[in-house]
Structure formats: structure tokens, C-alpha cells
Length: 422
Picture 1 (cartoon, rainbow, N blue to C red):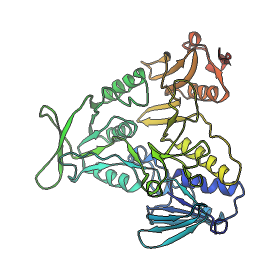
Picture 2: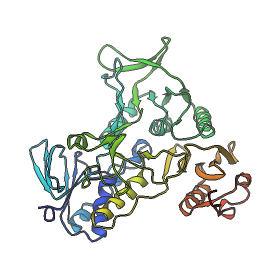
Picture 3: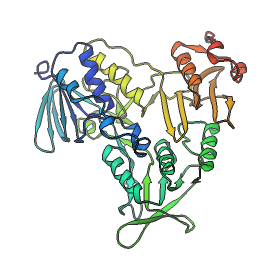
């Protein structure tokens, strides 16, 4: 049964599509079924908060692949089916049942289920106009609301919130951002980068409140949101409220199967879940750090396109019998209006920061060090530095901290071999 039924991939996400295509590239000949709960063909999500909201791209142009691709590669793409239960044997084979009653047999299972928006449980959360942004339908709904909106409130100063805020400003809306933390995107970047984005967005006429404590969403008495109330009684006017306070990994199926879960579905360095047969990749995976070093977290969950792609390739290699430890340099990007942030590496545990370039010119890099070694970089409108540090981290090279601030010299000309650990 396990050989003939092939693999069932639950989640028509970036990771799911990459897993299916990588399997075919690696010579996997058994059936592949890729199931998605949405009715849209698999598509890119990052543009939803940016160019899609601004009307620069359409939903059709965001598709990863044409329908012909799936047919030519003998990938059975099933849309609009939500898996609600799975019966699985110890050898990894089993049957999945969808909400419609349709059943899918498989020889091996892969979960690329992604994540869902974290919801706020506040008075007025159910009001019309309080929105979340994760999928194409969410984006289409928000785009339609923005057409007639005057005042837009974004709850959350993370990547999605700031991208959407910049898009709304570009559309001429009055935009307010309410962030509960003392700084913007604080979990992802250092203070210098965070402070820059605070000033940059404010200079672009986005009203930003830090340490914001929201008490409730205010309505008009007929079910529509009209504002967001803060501690102290101030109400920020709102025709539309976008809540962007992070995501929660989709682990329901894994938990029902008895798989170990923490901050996502726990996997090893070969993308295998705790049962030793189920594969997991993408935003739902709680994995060993793919760039391990002293001072960095041992396990983490990465929400990025490159992780979804590379981890899916790693999972495909495991399936075809070419198991290798998952190693890669994490990198991320965020387009916030005319500001492009590119990040490489993980800055957790840094003990020194070097600024390179001009904050005033909005083109600079923040390089993070630990024990004299480059561990990460934040680059604002500076793709050359980003590529240099990304390459440096991949090759195990370094740039001396006392030289890195010389923006007149390319980083690639400063690269040296890392000194052996003492």
C-alpha cells in the first residue's frame, strides 16, 4: 500500500508546491496528491499586503505554477478540500478524510499546513470591518474595504502591519498603527533598525502609537466598527481595522496524530516528525536551528519564503532516500512602501553592532556580531550589503568589526577566513 499510494501533501502552500515539484525533480515516480483548503490555485502570499493591496498585481498573476505544470508532472492538485481526520498506520500509510467526506489514501504523509492569524479576543472583535490578512480572500476583502475607507487603523507593528500601513498610505488613506510593544518589529530587528522604521513611517505621515493598550473596538450600534479605544479613553477613528499580531502554526492534524508539537510541529534536521515517517515543512515546522551557533536558539520556527522552499527540498531528499541535515542561512525581506528591508542570519545573542552607510539617506546596514564574528545583518535599501553578508554566512567567512563601518569599501573586499575557535 505505502509504495503504490504515493504521498499525500496536506497544504497547498509555498512549501507544499515546492515539495511536490522537488520530488519530481529528484525522480520520485509514485503518485503525488497536493490538497489545499482554499479554492485558489497555490499562490504567493507576500505580495498580498503590498502590491496586491495597491492594485499593482492581480490574484491570477500570483499563482506559483500554471495548471499545466501540475498535469505535466502528474501532481494531483485538489482544491477546496479541508482534511478533518486521518487514520495512519505505523508504517506511515493511511487514509485522510475531508470535511466533504472525500477520502484520500496514501503511502506517506507530508504536512505543509502553514499558519493562521492570531486573533484578538476583545470587545467588538466581531464588528464588521475588523479584518485579518493571511490569504487571498482576506486580501481581496481588505482591498475592497480600502476603496471607500478614509481612516485605517492597523493593530500590530510587525512586518505585515507595516507593509499594509504603507500600502494604505500610498492609496491616500489616513493611517494609524497601534503597537503593544515599546518598538516596531522588535522580535525581528535590533533597536537601530526599529528606530529607523519608526521615524521613517512617521515622516511618511503614518501615526504610530507604541506601548498601545487596546481596550475594545468601538461600533456604530449597527454592527460596524468606527474606532479603536485605548486605555485612558482615547478612541482612534477607524473605517477599517486590520489586525496583524502574528500567526499561530496549524498543528491540529499533527496533534490529532499524536505527533510532538511545541512552537509548531516538531521535526528533526531531516524534516521528519516524531513518528519517523511524516514529513513537515514551512511555517508550521518547529525545527532545529538551520544555522546553529553558540548564543542562538536551538530550535525555532521560521516564517519565510526561503525556509519554506529549502525545507521542502530537504523533505523531498529525505523521501527519496538522500537524507541530509537541513542547513541554510535564514533570510527575510519586507517592502514597506519605498523602504526595502532585507535581513540575513539571526541576530539573537549579538554582543556588538556596526552601522554601515547613512541612516539620513535611508540606505544603510546594521551588522550584528558575536565574539567578533558576523552573525546577521539588517539592510535598508542596500541589496549589495545584503548579498555580501548572505554569502559570507553561507561560506563561513567574516568581516572584521573595526573595518565593517567603512561604507566606501565593499564588504566582499573585506571578507576574511574565520579564525579557529579557541
